[in-house]
Length: 280
Image 1: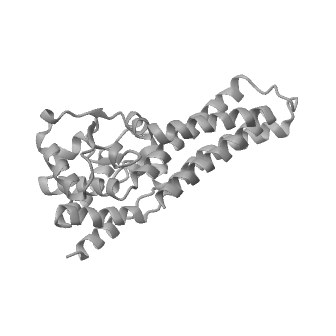
Image 2: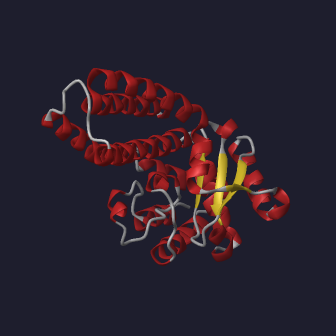
Image 3: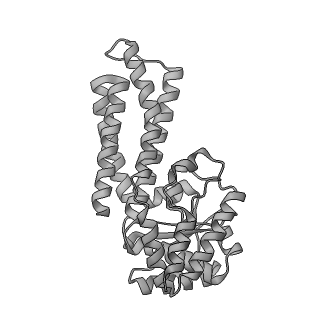
């Protein structure tokens, strides 16, 4: 199912970019953007983990820098039956974490600086178990690919916007105002499409990762306690992150006042905690 979702995402991207190219430069633009879509799909699939790491500003974390963290991740990975993922740190005081990669053999786990400062050992283990669960359940392919494609669509829309402001149009339509309207419409719709790509990610994946993570950790209490702390911290500690990657994190890293929070792919924390507390 996750592989099918990945192909659907790449198909949606291709259709969207062809429509943008057609609106901007007619048939030649449609063909050019079709080629761009093919390249983006290729690099998005094979290098989506590296793209997500770069978009979040995460950096490799050596084992001697965080031996206890490595021990927790290695133990959880063994319980889950997956290879040891690469470990990264995200330079942010907000406690949070995410997993990325197209499959368990190419996976990575990133934790923010604030995670180890605010949570206790049991809570950190619960958060890490949740991220290992995403890798075990193979959710990371869809989430990482969506982040890469959503970010790319937003960048293309911004480039088209500045191109219209400074360059105008000079295509086979001869400056037809309807063509300009089409270009403006695509500039508006492209970021919306990026949001829809994020919304296409099922919210049930978080509930499933919570349940799997609780079993890997041996108890649901650490994760439940961590989620409550992470939610409170996200409201008060800002995190500078590309909105296209917000769905990767265990809790939405965007502030409560952010308009982008309206489009969160995360289910309510209260409901996640309630389900965890019902687990024995």
